[in-house]
Length: 376
Image (cartoon, rainbow, N blue to C red; front, side, top):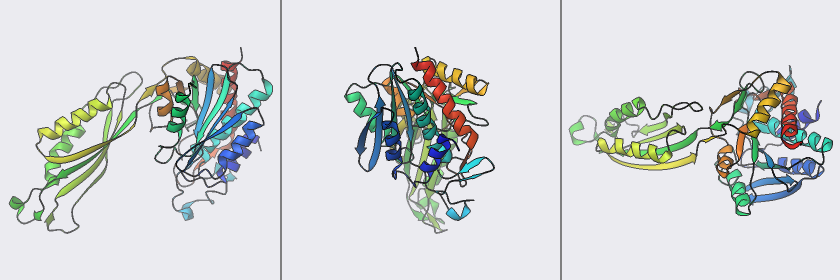
């Protein structure tokens, strides 16, 4: 069994359900220290973060990731105990196997091999690891980045090890992500007996034509890197539970995954204009989950594409699809950010698993990327 697979197994054994890290970061810090990395613990609230850097010179290449995982769901539905990693038919099963303990392990072993072979490499290498990515993400990477910026420590290149691949390792390389904007809307009405609707004001009926307009609206047409902005409702609720009562309010939670063709301020304005057109009584609050970011070109993207070609023998497709990642906190600093990891088919699912061979290949890709960027 390879060192990368062994490290992945050790990380999965630790039940680090967000925001707990359960010793994962200490294990990694100890390994990195043996290769000349200086460890710094940055704790905010109940979240532990690790900033581990080797060297002071520019450029600074950062491996970013998280060791926290989502809850397991019903344990009885798992093929194996989710925190007792098991290999069967070439796949490693366990919570976090794909998202993203295998990615973290691959980063660590790639750095270990590279530093051992090239101790006098150019620039610096660092790890930014958190246990607050799968949760509210308020005390993790975003706080570490703020700390680094406040002391003038700037990241040039950042590789995020999120699971990005679709059918085979390295077939998808994420060079950006869409922004995320969530709205929480309450439409007010007047409660009454369902047999006397003229004495009430049904907020569900009030919202129905608005919903039709929202679904039909074209927010933008996207661009060469981003698909068009999408509006989706995730939750809608009204009613008392009784069959003969018109409710007095309707609650709706909706989300935009938006491109660089529109701003979150634009979207908020359009929504308010639409609601006001219908003259309804409402309350609306917003939660901005992150700006869209894009690394359209640059040394990091070129080096990663070349490394995939070198190791896998095929070209990666660039993509900005999927959910948000901690890359949204790093890209606004001016850093080039890309995301490359294992297959994402089973992430957050029961029986999450990863192809064992892919774990080692991913580590080789990371090592080749380091060589292309830091050997001069």
